[in-house]
Amino acid sequence: MRILRSPEGCPWDREQTHKSIRRNLLEEAYEAASAIDEESAEDLSEELGDILLQVLFHSDIAEDNECFSLDDVIDVTCKKLLRRHPHVFRDTEVSNGEDSLNVWEQVKREEKNHETTAAAMDSVARAIPALWRAEKIQKKAAKTGFDWQDYTGALQALHSELNELESAIAADDKEAIKEELGDLLFSVVNTARFQGVDPEDALNASSDKFVSRFRHIESTASKQGKALSNMTLDEMEDLYIQAKEERTHARTDMTE
Image (cartoon, rainbow, N blue to C red; front, side):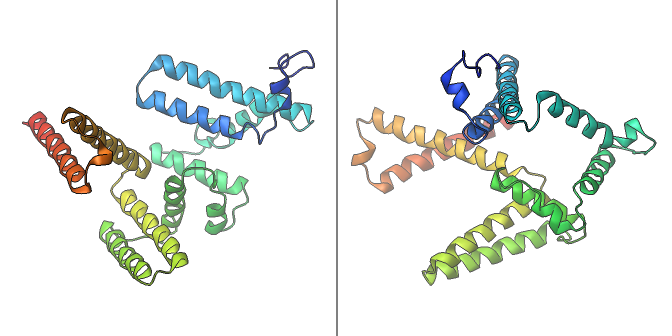
């Protein structure tokens, strides 16, 4: 990397800044996540290497700007691991993984000087997927006791937010519609949290399901010698329902 960013190296690499390659870091992380989902050790090895490359890239840019070096990055991480595992490196006792996580969060809160839960909420990165950010904020609130007793409260709030969205749409209030849509999504995440469901996983699964059903619409229409642009919505809806029913039957057959 130092050769690439040297005067004798690559012009593009020399021109980059933290901001210009910010998206690269995010994309590489998501590609590594995809490799994990696909259970491909070969792909994961490659994608982890790409993430490591981004760490080296950012560290070299920072060192050129006399901010920090790769050694600093590694040193900070090592010290953080030591501090946040007092049950391993000091005399704190824990009984299970949840206790360990609570210790980590407590030490983190002290490190960050989060005197209030709101301050801890503010520290949740806005760059992470919005559904995950909402979930993390809700979990921090729950630790103070500010939470529904069970899923029924979250579900009732979900219905209430849907009613408020419908009212905003009826009034054609664009700002209110945006706000109520956000509240509805926040309530959806709350419901998912009570059910132990990762909202990002759930939404991705639904997106995959929609793509699969739409592929059925296209392939069936093609076999019938039709183009989607010439079909009515009702005709396409019939094919969509057909794909849904076929998937339901296939799932039933697998469980029998």
